[in-house]
Image 1 (spheres, rainbow, N blue to C red):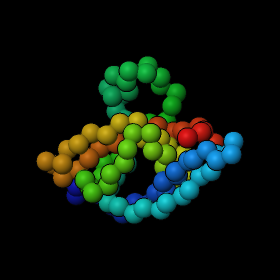
Image 2 (tube, rainbow, N blue to C red):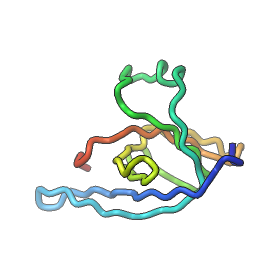
Image 3 (cartoon, rainbow, N blue to C red):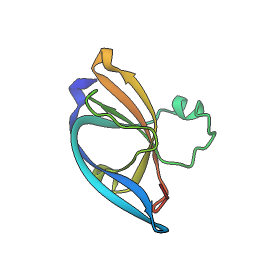
Length: 109
């Protein structure tokens, strides 16, 4: 899998509520990884039961540490906000997997 990795860049949006207003602090990050759509079997097994959302798997080197609920913007995904839904640690195989879901634009912290 790691042979398919390429240089990717994303912007992590840290949202904070200040004085009844949501402020977004962008932080750009570059790493090695690859995007893949979820397979039909993976979609079928989702606990949410929702199929209308745009979902992706992000495979990356273990040095990339994202937390569930982080909001990211990838140029490769047309600059749409995505939210980290889960993290799977496969460090023994030299990668980690994240499930990303397209997020509502302007969602709160």
